[in-house]
Length: 450
Image (tube, rainbow, N blue to C red; front, side):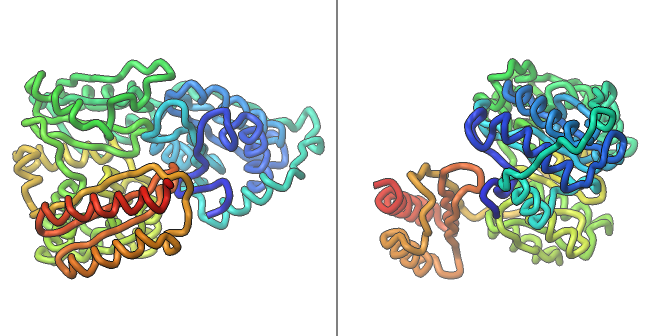
């Protein structure tokens, strides 16, 4: 990774470096330069955003940088991240930009960039953009007035994506199903309710009134208990919660209980294999997935490919291996038969299709694997120091791994987008999980916060 680009684009606190108007302006120039815009009509970029107040600032600055270098701009307004990926490809844009900080609070923002094929930029392309961005040598005075780019507001962008999303679930009818949709006051606040209503479901929408400040605020995919309570209150069949940019989705069953992301991956993989639609009988997951998922897949004759944490790594593995289903425990599901990135709405439609096709409720479908007790904890750190140089943590990790042996595991990594460290402990006994999580948390506090 470079100085600016992390695991999911550029991210930080809005109006503080690097998420500033100045950087967005220069990033627009860098994109136009790298994609070789030569004047109005020669190259096109597409810009979408979530509902954060700072999106206006970044959208305007980024547009200015692009048009100053002769690149035309399609503005599609608040749409999910996967909509930007899809529209970039179908509208023949050279690059797509999504302004979002995903599940982060409103005062953060970020910039994700897609290439013309709808996939996130390669590391090499990000490095090239960063090189030009940090060089301080980008100028636009070679573009004369008649060659400046234009910006266009695309009024039917949401409708285009809605029709695409519905097309991924052919002949799906949701008549008789009652759904609670938690839109996280984010990018899906209009699109998601329309899609599920048009397919016949009775929709109870919550947290679908963004004001620029309330995105992800005690709602959405990180707060599944909220949608779970709403499911019980409204006697719904299913709860669906998106994150701020709707590339992730979390489900709750009719009892208001969250269905773990690994269970969703398992039931979808088993269904695709049964229908002979799981390419190479392989599911791609990350190191955060439960050992119980790997075991269940093995029993079903399904291979699991494991990547580092981050949907971009899952997608890279899927593209390289020719696989069509992968995802993360956190709610990213990736169906490359339909999409080039994680898509919460498309994933929800696939789960609903499975429910309708089999006549089984979500809880019954999800009861397809045994989970090992697992705990994930995110802890703030003063600085991201090399983990191998932290004596207490190194010692305790070695002791933990020896104690767990082959019947458990421990993973430690820094967040790619926040100043936090992630701890994962998994074992056959809950007591061991709790014991080692507390031990490792104390070691983190001693080594990284004192």
